[in-house]
Image (cartoon, rainbow, N blue to C red; front, side, top):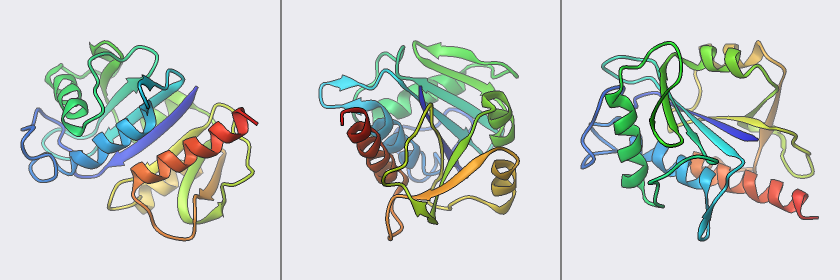
Length: 193
């Protein structure tokens, strides 16, 4: 299973309008693009992928949402479709355990530290100054990416508590969803070599 954690520093933690994903929803558009980049193939889904969203915006942070490629339904390759499933998850009464909102989509209370503790595995942290991702082998990878604001010092400290590796997909700063596509490409090449 390949896993991606995307941190949304301003992402809404209550139901939001689908008509203003970049604004009132706290840059939910970025998280939706990451969900799509992680899960979609041409005419299919990647069934061996989970995407975890860490929502840190108002009014009730933090919350976690999980998209499981093996079970997700009703997801189409557009931002609004992913946003609709996130909104439905936020309509649930989030507890300290995972609650399924729609097939393959679950929500719970908690932040990055809670999620990392639950997953408890080696982390591959994407940062511009990391080692080149090319040629590295990944076994059950857990990738952590920031949104347009990056990753805070406290979040980095949470990551450093676990076995981790810092990697980069290239010499330039890229959008998180583009990084996910490049990571998949690298893993696809290794798996099909």
